[in-house]
Amino acid sequence: MSWQQRISEALSERRASASFRTRQANTLGNGRIFSANGREYLNFSSNDYLGLSHHPQIVDAWQKGAAQFGVGSGGSGHVTGYSRAHQAFEEQLAEWLGFERALLFISGYSANQAVISALAQKTDTLIADKLCHASMMEAAMQSSAQLRRFHHNDIPALAALLSQAHDGERLILTEGIFSMDGDSAPLAEIARVAHQAGGWLMVDDAHGIGVLGDEGRGSCHQQNISPEILVITFGKAFGGSGAAVLCSQETADYLLQFARHLIYSTAMPPAQAVALQAALTVIRQGDAYRARLSANIQRFRQGAAQLSLRLADSGSAIQPLIVGENQRTLDLASRLRERGLWLTAIRPPTVPPGSARLRITLTAAHTSHDIDALLEALYDETGR
Ligand SMILES: *Cc1c(COP(=O)(O)O)cnc(C)c1O
Image 1 (cartoon, helix red, strand yellow):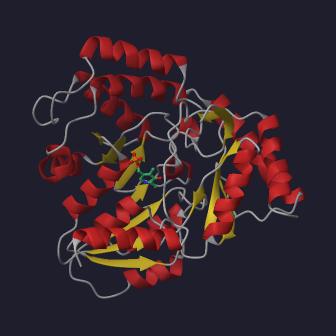
Image 2 (tube, rainbow, N blue to C red):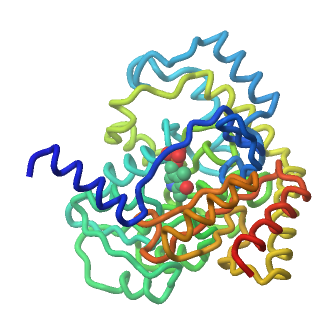
Image 3 (cartoon, rainbow, N blue to C red):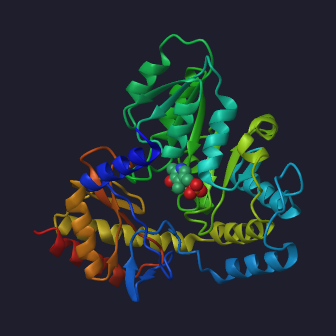
């Protein structure tokens, strides 16, 4: 088969199974309002959980950072790209989360890839929750280590894998809050069985950081554990982008030697590090944002229960409405758009086959009126 034929066939298959993906260019997309095609929608698809993407202090910090440092970092952090702004932010993160070190990455995707590819060697075993994010799973599959997966949040299944004979080291991979289901991991128990077996634990808390725990320290703090590796991202509650790996002094030094995603990639712009420092300040003092988000989650869950909407069991900002078939999910999303609500259909292979869903995300920026409008539209359009 030629390249051309292979590409055409792959596209036809995607179209035939209603899993063809498209993007919608918006004029504004990250806040409470999604605006595209000359129309405004209430946005229930953004990960800007605290509504900080337009926070004036953070925007101002980014602008001042750009005026001071320019727009780019000029190179890899190992060459010229590592500024005092990056360093100060790393130190603040380490202090905030109680780790010896923090290392900044340009994205959560690259942070997960970097850590897994730098740590795992041939005789090692990576033991991952089945619902771990693609960025971890793909790194794990590409690595020369063995990959074993355990049923979602299933401690006995994890313990059984850990009791098997092994040669090298074991690294257990999970998330604080799962990105497509919104449920949280029983981190205290996972840490206990992982450490009893002498393994290391790596937690990706992309959706918990900033939102959960005292001063927004996230899932691990809330559940009182300290994993060997914590990955946090700034594309969600921080309202920006980028990521950090929190770890020990020696692990950080090791990653600086062996994490190719750090060494061979341009560092994040220093202005972004300045903006993220401002976001961290807002987040640490952000109880009011967290309270508004929780109130919105509660209002939505209570309203959905009254209307007998079948929601997944999630207490987080991610509230999936599982529909099942791809086409039905797409149709539902498009009917909701006609009513002025922006929701995205999430389909396989992002989620397991037959579990296409609307991934509803609630934020601190939504009003109670917005939540009620969503509930009313879901009630009407899911045909009850
Ligand atoms: C969003 C997300 C990532 C990717 O982070 P980016 O900074 O967007 O690349 C990684 N892990 C999880 C669990 C995520 O939800």
